[in-house]
Each structure stands twice: as C-alpha cells, then as structure tokens.
Image (tube, rainbow, N blue to C red; front, side, top):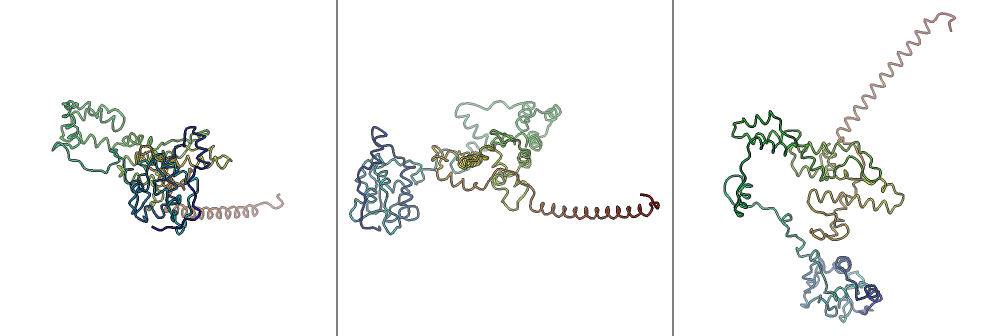
Length: 426
C-alpha cells in the first residue's frame, strides 16, 4: 500500500453539518443514504486504487464483502456502528499515524470535512450497504424471467411437449383434460383468436367435412396466411409501442404520416419476420446497412408516443430541457418494457427497487438515444433518392425542350401573322 505523511489532517470532531442534522431531525443524525451520499465518495476518491481495475493491498471498495472485511492487513476495514474501529475511516481521517488516504501521489486530495462526516455517520448508523450495490452478483434477480434460458425435459414422453407439462401438472392435482372440442367450436375459437373475426359459414362447412388427417393444421395455416392475421395481432404490438396518430398534450396535432409505422407492423406479422430482425429495425433500422425503407419506417417506434409541442416551444431554456428529459424517458421506457419486460425508466431518479437496474445504467442507456428527435423524414433509400433526382433532371430537360419548341412555334406564328397582315392595317 502506498502511504503519504500525515500533514494537516482533519480532526474527527462533530461538524456544524452534524449539528444542523441534529437540529433538523430533533432526535439524532439524518439517515445517510449509501447510494446518494457514500457511493459517490468511494467513486470519486477511492476507486482509482481500490476499485474494479486496481486493488492496492488487496483492498477493493466496489465489492461490499471485500470492503467490509479489509485487504492484506487482515483487520476489518468497516466495523458497523463503530467508526473509530474502522480502518477505512481511520485512514481517510488521518487517525492512523503517518497515513492519509487518498495518498498525495494518487493525485487525489484529502476528503473534505463534510464527506468525512458523511462516512463517519454512515458507519455509526450501521454501514447500511444495499444488495443492489454489493458488486458480488447479488444484482442478478432470482425471478424466473431473468434466468438463463434452458431446454427442460418434458415430464411425459411422446406427443406434444407443451401438452406434456400441462398433463403433468393436472395429474398432480388429480385433474384431467377437458373433452376435445367439436369442429364447429374449434374453428370458431381459432378464427376469433387468429384474425379476430367469426368464420364464414362456408369455412365452417368445409372444415366440418374435411376428412384429411391434417385438417386442423391446414386450417391454422390458412388463418395465418390471411391478411387479417397481421391486422389482428399487430394491434397488440401497437399497444406496447404506444402507437398514436396524434401528438397528445395541449395541441394534440394529427400526425398525417403515422400510418406508415402501423402498416410496417402489420406487414411484419404477415411476413412472419424473425423477431430479432423486427427488434433491430425498430431500435436502429435507419442506421443498419443496407438501409431499407422498412428500417427507416420501423424506427418510428422510438417517437410514435406523445410529444409535448407546448413544452418544446417554451422560451424558458430550463423548461425545454425538462421536456427533453421526459421525451428520452419515454423512449427508454418503451424500449425497456417492450423488448426486455423491464421498467428501466424507474431508474431515472434512483436505482430500481425491484429489477436489477442501477441508477447509472439508466443514463448509460439514455446516452444511446440522445440524438433521437421527434419529426418527419423521407423514407426513401439512398438509391431511391438518386433515381428520383436523375428522373427529375431528365423531366426538367424534357420540359425545357418542350418550352423551346413552344417558343419557336409562337415566334414562327407571330412572323406569319405579320406577313399576312394587310398593308395599312393596325
């Protein structure tokens, strides 16, 4: 461990800030927050030598267990409820003779009195260190939806593996499957489910009389091939993407071109587009090479939610900045909830209370979308723009040629009219 000589080290006494806290609380010190008060001190003053990239004397402060137990000295660095026995506090306050952390050669200055008081009070209050910041993998949630994907073995061999799991659970409860539906009921259920409309009488009759061994599968294929399938199931995606055809807020102006995104979603469902491609197009389709019309339209998802025209038109710079932050939260929220099933936007103001999303990750994700703005743009590709420009130039050339012919005809007509005019006529 590198040391520096003790020189004008602050004395650990109760500061005016502590007295103020006592006066405010009436009963003692205000509760110190690890996330808001302590963690920034560690990051700003300690991580350079005792962080994830470097661990002088085997001590690291980004992992709770190591930070408390201490490094190579073998003594606890943090003793809850006893700052005077905690090596961490003794080093940063200069109570260890000849030592003061951070050392001068690190380029860091000694901790200000206010931050020393924060550390001392935090330790005296029990050194509360939430699991979300333990740095030891505890941020990985035990919730089933956040576990790595595995392929389970069906509990019953043969048949449809999905049915095997259902049958096994039913057997645990001494239950059995419901009777198989008759064909009239089955086609009604399938048709309402897949296209949202009742089956035609002719379709019912055909299915009831279809003796093929694959009659059910053929019916499913026909319904999936119907244009109404994308219209029916695309609506669910449009709800998740908070699709709207007006801006909302005070003005609620209509968006005349919003329908392009709606049709893109319907088309994607009907084409059975791979989900990975569907996802990439909506997040970054306008920059993924080769850029396509679908890719440009798909990114409308990021801005198809409400837009505060009044807030963006404020003369107050602060209010415009607040409005912009709200817009970015809307983008982060829809991406997180739609593609990840996580409310990332909750971490805008604090580390997530339930999901493993630290406060800092919100702003890391926000930086990805900083350049995204509400507005309209051409959906033509580079090649289409070039072809349009070339065609426009050709039409301009033909137009000019036509004008020249018209001018020649008019000039010739004027000459002939003058030549035929009787002498002395006006």
